[in-house]
Length: 112
Image (tube, rainbow, N blue to C red; front, top):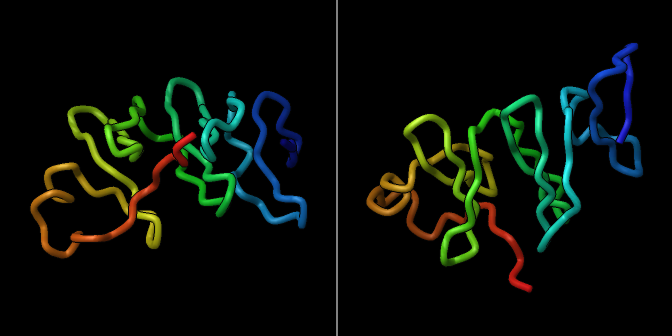
């Protein structure tokens, strides 16, 4: 965790090599559980995959883990996944019915 640019109320996450993983917009962070660390900015949440350092900025209202250990991101009335390769938000319905998303990996927790 680090602060820069004179920011005192918020912090960011930096890798050991100095690469910025998440800008200093965070107000909270949790311990990593099954490879995923929850992050917060005010009342919004996101995650960091601690294996790949992929950061999903905290712009979601809530998070859930589904039966396959995939992380479901909730924003308003929309529920969806974040793809591993492009980091794009895909609604659950789109993921289940759109042939463009068949077998596309999404962010998930490692099973314990």
